Amino acid sequence: MVTEQARGAPLKPLEDTTPLNGAALDVPVRVGWLLRMARLTAGDAAASRLSDMVERLGDEGLATSSSSLHRLETGVVRDGGLVDAYERVLHLPASSLRAAVDVMCRAFPYSPADRDPGTPAGTVEEMQRLHAPVLDGSAAGHEWLAWARAMALPGNIGLPRGLSLDLFGQLLSEAGRAVGRGYAARYDALSLLRRSAYGGLVVEAVRDCVADPHVQVVNDPLAVVGQAVDDPTTAWALDLMEDQRPWVVQGACLALETMAEVSGDRGFWTPHVERLALAYNEAHPGTGPWRWLSHLMRLLPASDLQRVRGRLAHAPSPTVAAPDPANRTANPVWLACEQQSNQVCDRLGVPPQPLLTRLLWEIVAGGPESRASAASFLCTSIEPLRAAVADAVAEIAVTSPDPAVRERAGRRLVGLVDVRVPRVLTGWADDAGDRHRLGLLVSGVAGEVMPEHVLLAAVETPGSARAATYSAGMAAHPLLPRLAASPDPDVAGAACWWLAHGSRVRDRDLVVR
Figure (spheres, rainbow, N blue to C red):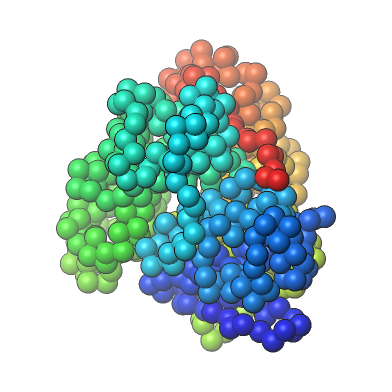
């Protein structure tokens, strides 16, 4: 972590110097980096000097100093109240920074405590205000999050079972379809509720979701399940590894990885190694379940893996080699991340950011999904950064010679897209290969309705049918009712699910004043 610099000296770049495959990240420096980037890239509200920020915060009635903000922006302290204040004075949408910080810190149990997490709702009138948009179905992400913070407080059990399940089901559905800043806020809200006294009902709502044979979005609900660890839920996640739907197996693996991370217990995997090995051996090489179960096997501590290594039936899926710490630029993937990071910084008008290079690596090549997800939350919380990073990740997903990198970068690109298809994918519908496959997915996330002939051709191609219905569902494609009548039960079921749940959810850009 950087130390406080001399007054007037250039800002020292922030960097996470922990090993790429190490046991822990430097979470504090990442929190500080996010706030610094928010300050420097806030458009007309940008404050190039900390003294400017001190003055603006003073206008808001918050007395502070340049040295205090320097400590905040270098990760020496974590202060939720100041994060909220940054959103206000930089004219950023509500919870855009706070949700990213809190999601990341909740994911890694060694994260610093928040010295100002906020004042709990303390009056009937305030609770009424928090409930109102949730109950009338109009809640944006930051409103869901404010409500969840109040509901998750110890002893604050105020909703009957049926209403709780209905509301949690709605929040789960919205989180799975949300894009942009509204996604992080909804995910954070669910994470809080999962760790609260309502946690069992959140799991029940997820069970109801997964029980639908044609459910189209499961990664986010099952990752939320993993935000807390208990024996019955762990057993259920293990059972889902045997589900016949490949996308449910993927979600189950994400749930188990999340449990292992948030528990902070290196012995988490030990009781389950035999079960994992059995599921791995039953997965056919080349399939999605094989790739995801290979991922879990790579997460095992060496002592656990050694117990079953000799009984594994086949080789794991390919992975991406981490660079030599002494010469990272000799690794072509790291070099591509560094080049793209520098281009992003040029585009934003900020100095080179070593930490951004690392975040790109974690998104496009890193192994743990928990780290890739945290990196994505950071990069999507600031709009100019999000758009530039989406272009960078898309470029690597299309141009990398490594198929494992193309697969990971492409899969993780989906969570970075908001209102625009990345530049390298412009014209994707008339292309083939990776550009066409990625364009098919991200066009729906961006809300673009693809040409009818492109959709119908993709639906009739087994390898792209699921991506095509996902894209059509997210974009509310006018052909969805026709697809719902398809003789193919998978296509019809997917279209019916989207018609029942709705399309992409994108919050209006409500700015805190």
